[in-house]
Length: 583
Image (cartoon, rainbow, N blue to C red; front, side, top):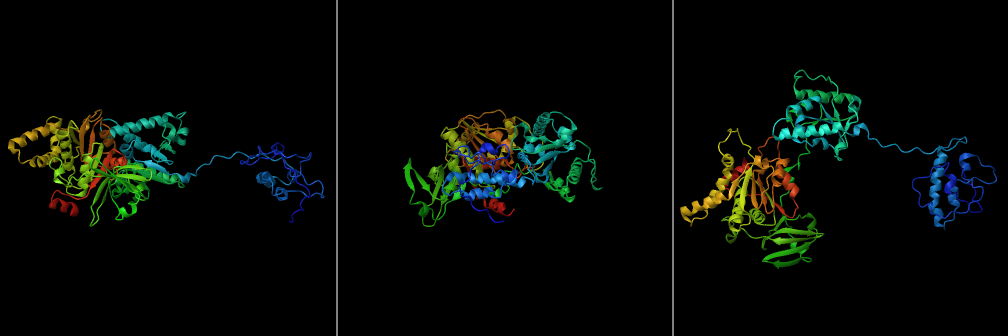
């Protein structure tokens, strides 16, 4: 259709009050009310006639919104800003108006966007997940949770006692009671709609909680006993999958055999992974970073250096700074040059400050007769002897010297420097093999068999002083014993340690909750050292990724008063080193 001839004079504009009754303007109004109103002739109907009535006379062609915009002169900026608004409104009305002259309806408000049912998953929780993590109900983000009735029955059977599992079950029961209390009525219809998980303040949970409110009869294979709780949960998952084929129904369980049976029946099953700090233990923060070989060439031009108290400081800026963390230990060993061993003490913007370390490998700097034999041991002794570092974690294989260096540093700062009043040693009492039963005696006597590593290391430290004689060594052992207290983990709740050097041995067997309980016991002037080998975890249902030691290392990295070192090389004996590699 050819365009009409351009008009001979300037077209008139519509005022907002004139089309507000019949047209709905767009949401975006670029300062329309602030624009000066152009004088309008008494008959401003040329544009509206395209919507409501045919043109009155063929002598004057009808001007559409596009024609009006094309007829506007290009100079005034006000017309250019208003033209798209008229075109949008006119085009929308012209598209919606029927051929007959009918009044234009206002646009209905937008309906709320609803996610399709298949977009969110339905997770059926096994009882052991609730026993393991009482906050697991709020860890599934926007997805929904389904609890079979047999799960609630099993929770009821484990709520009594003082164990960690019983405490977790009671916490889950309180959370479920709070969610159920948020309902307006306890009818089956309202329960079937689901309980919003964010009603108790956990805004990160966007899904709903569904209870099994009716009997589900799902046929299982003949080989599975119908009365067992695990098999009843599998039947519920199978029935839900049949009832909601458009939705993904997933069983979540910490029981490996339960997941195997589910997959054998063609049901999706997953492990509860929210408690894992890291999926792969190789990604754990090591606390040590090797500087590139061209470190001096790339950072030497903008580097500042100064000395204070016999310690050299370097302020660097460059591409290396974003990869550094506070209290991270760095080293540079190149052939033909003096090695650099330093610690990151400060990171400000795009610059970092490095402080050189004390060489504990030299005999004059020996700590209680113990000197470092490799680079990582030197790093560990620097952290253990630093009064500004309140929390130290040491990991490594058997024989790397974790307990020996920690005990030597503790005795040096308790007896020589008088920085701490005494040493407190504790560990979780998890046996490697079969339990030998109850132990007689007081708390320290009961903990004695668990502290064989302490006795072995004290023997090494006492043997170093050969000039004191037998009586002198006996007196030293009595003095050392008086400064070391052995405490059980079971009686730590509510305690506060003041000016103590606390050693948590075999920390890899602690859960994250137990680790938090111990670390929060620290009072003013207390230093806590956690030792452990992540390859030797004896606690059931605890892995390298979910261990409390891994949790502490990952959460404390980068804090100005904590440090971590992964000891790489064993120094116990050639037999122990070879066994760690080949066994």
